[in-house]
Amino acid sequence: MVIDPHEVEEWVNAYRKAWLSNDPRDIRSLFVEEAVYYSEPYAKPQRGTQAIVEDWLARKDEPDDTTFEFEVLATTDDLAFVRGLTTYNEPPRTYYNLWVIRLNQTGRCTEFTEWWMETDKPVPGN
Image 1 (cartoon, rainbow, N blue to C red):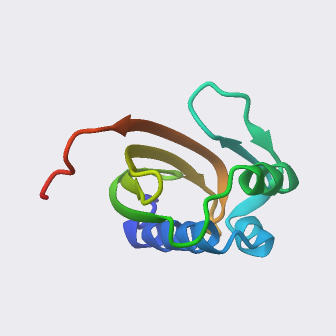
Image 2 (cartoon, one colour):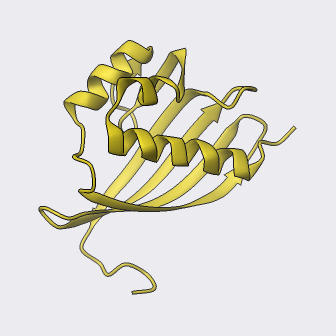
């Protein structure tokens, strides 16, 4: 059975909530205990929620320092592909994102990979 894109949207919205709050409980709620998190392709992953929380908080963004837009591109039986656009206020910079999210049957993430690229090109549509 293919993952419902609305379930992915809910997960990304919960990720964004954790991104803004930096609350360890919000971060942990996204992932299964043995989850694997790649902060960029081919990087050494964080394994387990404790390592994910520690790495997240070491690299955290301050609340309201970013805007984030996203679109669910595709889903399979356990994978979701999300395209995002992250804009930072200070210093000003913009990133295109591609997230590969592996979800279990309960909607929690078992594996997450971020692909991101900084750009100085204008945001499409603006």
